[in-house]
Image 1 (cartoon, chains in turn yellow, red):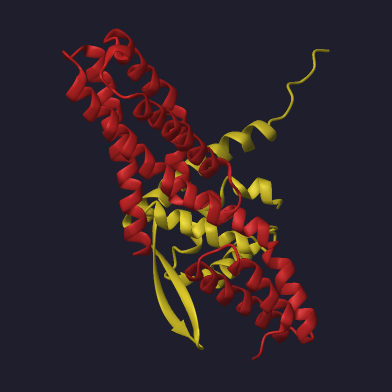
Image 2 (image 1 turned 180 degrees about the horizontal axis):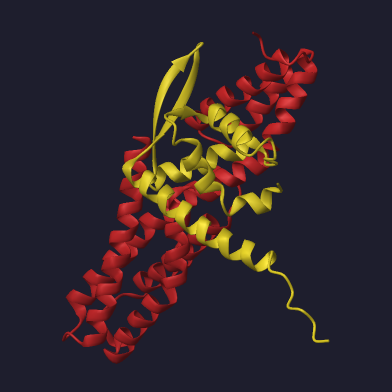
Length: 112
Length: 193
């Protein structure tokens, strides 16, 4: 999956990665890798600014902790984030169903 | 586990551009990535190279952080709506013959220079890929808009002989712009304060 293809859906994919509970940046990246079957082809460092953007939008909330002497920021979905994720899922299902139907439609029989 | 020099150099390159709180988070993620490759059996130097390659170039990451800065969207909105607000004020000044107002020339020049500087700051915030420069320009641009609009509204209230509908439109537009800028600036304090 190329970075440009993923970019338009990155916010929704990140929200989905946080649906199971709070995660720190690297755990989000691991979840993305697992959820996309290892097809994620994105500089993983760019996940962090995307998480910041979602936090600024109020869709996720971040908090600091110290693990192994390192400062770690953990994120979790907010109520607004859960609503946004549900909306994105519904939109994606509609879009995906429409495109699948269009791409898999059989040509009309040619006139004899 | 001591990190190889490559990891330290990479984080130093990020530290030169990004605030400490962001670098701390990136350092945690990069160290986790490095440790993952070590657990996979790679030698420390190879693991460091793999981790850095996976993370991406520092300039790409800092550019993404510049794009994600809260002032960026506000700066872009202010730039896009600027001509309409400016047109309202221009119409107000022309219809009230502002050239005859008792405002000294240095004050007029200062206002013009402040306007040009503000546009430059907002453009830098909107287009800049250098995090520190773009963030500072965004903060200064938003603060500058508040000051400029406050000066325009105060000046118009004090000097204009009568209230016209176009002046009401200009004041309303400036008030919305000030509220939008102040909300962005106070949001920054809430996020980082």
